[in-house]
Length: 461
Image (cartoon, rainbow, N blue to C red):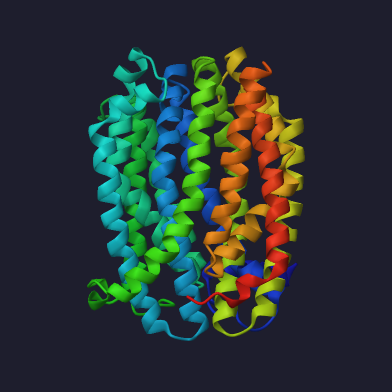
């Protein structure tokens, strides 16, 4: 027990950043602990927001749900850039080229800011139209447009929080990324009720207060990341000269990011279509679905911690010329993820009603959320392998293959199946939920097959 505690504390401190030698199990533990805690903190943004917003009413929850379904496009681009950043930085660290790793982070910052402006301005200007296209009624649009506008205006904070975390994870300094999310969530948790309900001298902003609190929390997290990346004691250091444009690095970054962004855009687009299908069944269904998704995110994002650990290990070990160690690391991380999600899925399946009841007491909303939660949990075992192995491919710099897999599973299978089950076969909302579980299972099967072929070991970045 004493040895475990020492190892756990070492993981939190981030005392090791290079994982190209030594025990693979130790490397997975040291990387995955801060990454899992980081993802828990990221998921808390969603859970905390919907917890307080639910106190306002069903319309407020639906506003958050419709906005977030479109905002997943921004998240997808951020995650895609983060994936590319992790692949490049981890490969440079594996090659023991820390100066070039710092230079790469500087280019990530430049590209992130440019993309944030391009995504944020249209969302800010066309907030009402976005909610209308997503099926929101006029009352919802009138009450929720401010929330949507504010969230899109915070695009720089959203994207940088993701991309800088990807850089830190690639460098092996996952503990710093973890602490940045702790800080961001601490601010969000304190300010959410303050701005939503108007506590003390602050005005009551309603659902808009959730957007303000989240934006402030993320901004504080980004400032902390920038501070840690520019100091001389970190795993890598970003200098002022590193943020001047370097076309070679930017070209390499964008080449990887296109694949990484595309695969998440494919997944995000499918979620938008699913939300649009569910919106035809009314605000109660959208609200129930939103609550269930937020609860599921709370478990899936920690699993992304293990997946991100696999990506870093694959990238660093390929950079060090050790492809077999990279492969072993990915398989072990996937097995650990399967054990974790099996336990969590069983708990959620059995306790779905009680868990959902913490967020809402509307009978119809609870009914939808419970059914969604239980159906999704049935696919957790397969999802565990699909998440880790897809991310391992990304860590190797092969972002094209996961994109193709996502297109097959989400666009060619999930969306048509959801429409068919829900509308043509009259299953209603449960048809949408089952289409997700089936497509995620298929994705895992394909990912295992592709990873076993081993072509990713020869990718150059």
